[in-house]
Length: 332
Image (tube, rainbow, N blue to C red; front, side, top):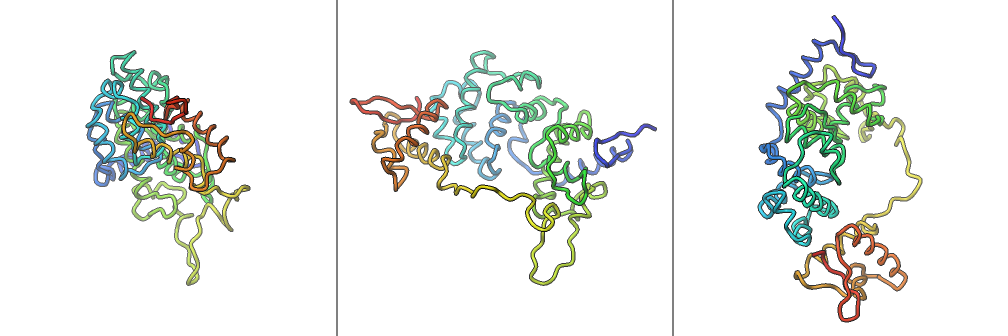
């Protein structure tokens, strides 16, 4: 009987592959996370959830997702809304450029497709602002396409399950290898549940720092399990990740920049300030620097001007002339 070969040192026979799938799907039926967007098959709510969930925790997303859909219940309604309203409602999610890109996408879909998202993976990938992951997630979760959906959690599960070097199960793998593994495991006709099951396994069991291998339904097939087995340690010693024997695998060559000193931090402060204004209010450019940075000096003007020009190009704000002076405001 021919064997189904996964491209790694670990091989599965067809029978083993069937058992692995059954085990994970049974675990998911009993332990899968209940999220409101998972109860929907409508493409638009799923699109909003996928954009909001990028680099943002589920707990922060859920109330914002509900409020967003209440304010903009369809792609067409979102397309018709002022940009300012969309950015204001995005407050608390961070990465405000996502709100702008979602608004631009809604406007294009409303204009070119009467508010209906395309259904094929190829057409979804061609949409502006929709990356490979989001296209796959929409195709799978909204339209039932049998396609892998490889997020951070799934990539970690696959990396460990089929570790090329079992002594170093957290060694990075290429996106191509991750996609190949995901496609080889995907059960036809069950892609939605399968992808969600892998996501939840990574989020709840196969955690980044302290995986709970004893609770994992795939432990019998996992090449990394032995590496994560807790060794005997002397009292007071700290556990060490199996992927970092003797210390960190990589050392940063540059000192880390504190978030409070980063451009992203000040961009967020600018948007927060503009959100607090009434719809037709603006901030004089001469005052903006001191209102977002307590120690703002003349030397910071070039930096601020560069960031404002970039944010204006991105659609996050507008610079207007008012009474002969430059003002900064939310986009209309």
